[in-house]
Amino acid sequence: MSKVKFDVLARTGTYTNAGGEEKSRWMKSGVVFENEKGYLSLKLEGIPVGPDWSGWFSLFEPKPRDGAGPGPKTDFSDDIKF
Image (cartoon, rainbow, N blue to C red; front, side, top):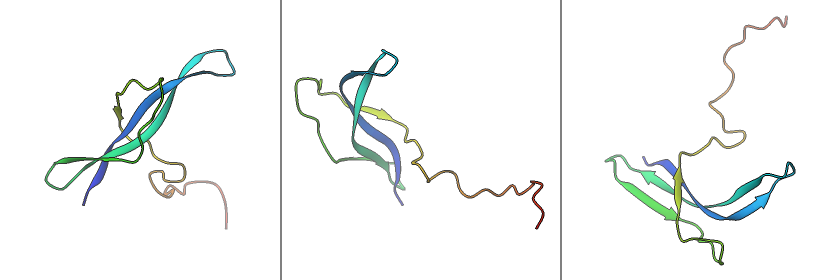
């Protein structure tokens, strides 16, 4: 079974946040999978266009998605009485 090894992102420009700091704007363009034999495969889902994209992609370890954390809570050592 293949698993996601990296998220593929492209820096598409910058923006200024509410605190006045300049931040990079990123677009998720795809993922890199690793199969059972250790081979890596790239699946591109989108490619940015425009003058702000340098043509480079960056690979980052995937972050857990909201609601897709490590699993349900199994430590039930609280003081709630039933």
